[in-house]
Length: 183
Ligand code: SF4
Image (tube, rainbow, N blue to C red; front, side):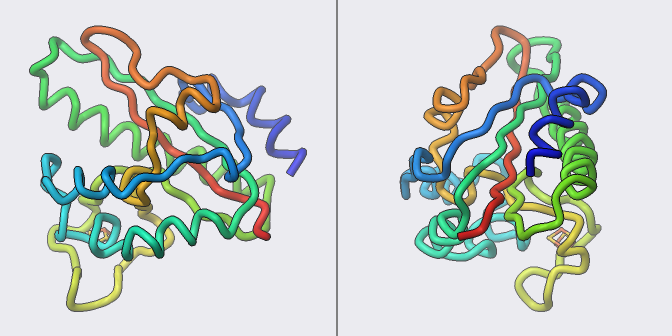
């Protein structure tokens, strides 16, 4: 794993990571309230794909899945908006975030071949019509649930790893993480 922790420092800017850090999973805080926010369905993802609740599993199952690991790598991407109502800009940022996540994951895989749980993308729009809930995901190795869908309190996680939860007016910040070092 030293390979990755060292290599990512040099590759951070090339991968377009805004900020990043590491934390023991024991210091990650969970809350079922985060899942209730998913149920409010502000993003429109709830109940529509395998990478959003309830398709990702119950709150307890998701929390337990993260706690099977010892450590977490957290990274953010930052995107400019025209103004705070720029919904189109937010969606473009989300798509760009998902592309950056795939590059980060590819880089991680080049340096670490152990088990890992990746929570990196936001609401999956890969297929014109998701197979959920009738058939398995078509691309399980190419799409990942969001951190929030696993019940992680991302604002507290940001503090723990020393990255900004938000980055000022007319910007949007998205998070990704990789859990590694399975117990
Ligand atoms: S890759 Fe396709 S089948 Fe899998 S979650 Fe995304 S939209 Fe659904």
